[in-house]
Length: 442
Length: 188
Image 1: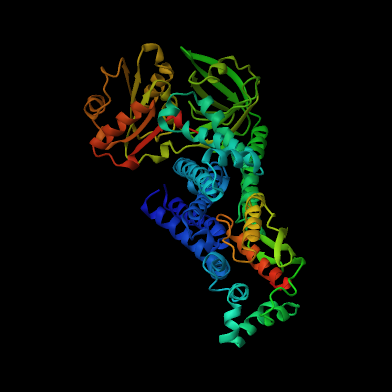
Image 2: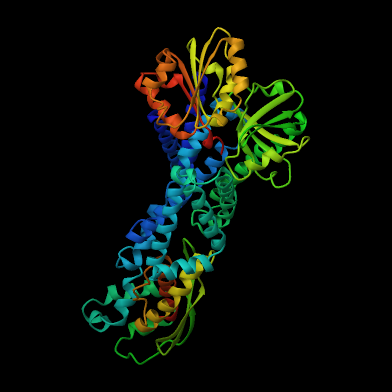
């Protein structure tokens, strides 16, 4: 990250903190001594503060990934996604605390059994049924985003569940302003809170819907050809106008939405598998998820909506005269695009891991690129046991590994193995560039 | 997010919080004087001792220290036929109040409380809330649960000497304040 970006991120942190303070103040400003003078009022008070902060962080989480162009430029998409992932769990914890603590606090105050009280709250209080549904949606999105759960499901399933957080945040709004003592009889508090929600909604509608739609239509991107590259792997070649103005580089990815029956509703994050030109972009895709299998059947002329480009997995990040590109399976595709982007004086070594020969996709292209610019491509076919990706093994093929910039893309175990290898060689973080492709987009 | 960012976020939070709280500080002060009155033994409300002194200890009080007792009752009862009844201590059978009396409206944090009592021969036979907090659902629910208890307590005590209902401290306080003024109007 550049100095400028770091500086902007500092400012963003302060703004985030200010909002957090203002939000906590909503309750503390409207509270009374009786909210703090015995155990259960304190429990209820804490639950409300948790609710406010959790909701605030949920809104921030949405805004962080809402693709606001000037924020994307000033902080960087990758950094925003990292923040989104870090804040998300806190939001869920706080809202979960709210649900439990408010049930306990209300039950004690009403001298009711907890189950009876929860039933009463959900059924009788205004907008509590939608709010309860919202909590379930929100928790589902959180749980499915834990690494272990995420690894067990397809991108499409995870994405669909995640989509419901929009609904969750909208559904939970009314119960807040109708039952929260910080809003009842406090018009200024209510105005601030409503303003936050409306601002988030406006940002999302503008930058996630309107702007991508306009850009996609303006560049008129359409599928030109679908080429089979190997078992379950296809390249989609897309044609549009003025694509050079997008400023995309090899190694970056877009979020693609193919406007075809059964596919238009979901977007996929795919990396460019060749450096983009004025009229063409290409992605190479393995049937990883439920819907990515269908891309094989895309018809030429299908309209493509896109958001992007994203990612900092780019040639300009290299700091040395030598780069080591390590790809696993279909993870080779952004590396293939990167190869075109490096300065001709740069020395390039490519390690391509695949379990079987047929999985060495784009092999002919790699070879001809390597010939053209004097790069070396090492094909490592076979199991992980035969090709352990540790420092010693990598250096058998790339003696200069220790002194190079490392780019790795592939399944998480491969990325982690190479990360360890790089660390053990003393390669600093700013020379290690990774793209774990199952975690691309939000 | 490194430690520095966390510090920046924390700093922003404290700044935002401090800014709001310095403009509109929390209302702890007003709430304690209001909320402490009922369950805290009535040390802050000046009218509390008056009803208890008139009901029982008056016969002895008139002989030893007649003036303070008389002034105390006068304060509490404003301008009603009651002063005549209290000053004429030897004949208690005379002029027991009857009628329907509405207390003053007591403003609480969650809304107004106003009590109406029906008195027959100096005995409270019915009590009800003309107004109670019902701006939001939670207040409605608390009021609906608490008011029957407050009615019971009032009938049982036949005075403002009530416990209040836990979990409904604002409504209880409002009830108490309004009841005191209703009793004063009735001259009890």
